[in-house]
Length: 279
Image 1 (cartoon, rainbow, N blue to C red):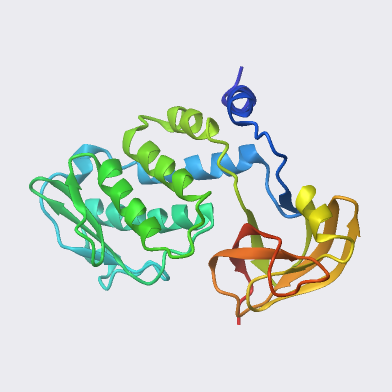
Image 2 (tube, one colour):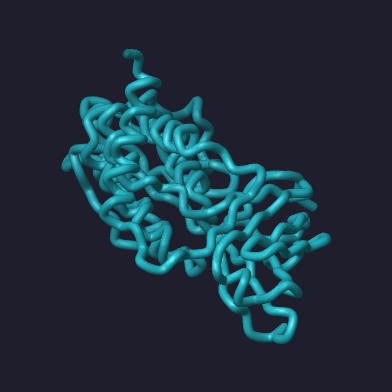
């Protein structure tokens, strides 16, 4: 059995075990987007990024080096990569990938840079303004910074926080890609829909909350988005949404309203905005 087949089997078995343990007594409404990728593709993407980060073996960070400041938006360091040692260039790439990992979950890493430095005691990694930590294991040092990025994201949904924590633990402890995949598959970490800008995206909400909202139910997206025609059929609502160029990156909400109350939402659904064309 090849690795891909093994991973599919692991998702199926882990997902079944998880569903048996966590099946809710009360049915929950679910939002899906027609742009969502499969659970397997999502997990593979997370593992791929982590694998890139964890290519740093302990020997790579031996010795001492300059303090590297990596900006989240551009990945720039303020230092020409050609002026850095091979080890420090690898650390810059790992820092950039750490920001990519948080974006892949759906978050916006904000504007605070990541500080990384090789020291006599191991690799130092910190989000600017945080204490950071030092570890002989690069994955462990960077995992602490991933947790700090999440802790400083005011829009991080409660459903996503434990997923980020589990990803950080996996980055710190998993010895290889297969082990990382197994640990993440047990969580089924696909809690939100990721919406790209300037694309017409179909949304479907199914469940009892739609029935509560009634046949004149409507939805509203994050600031800068436009919702198209909405249709309700029993417990299912369908609508199109376009995320505008001015909508902020990162986590957001889709709000479900009844036709009789446009001020108080019946419920909300976590989404993330990432990619697409910007202004």
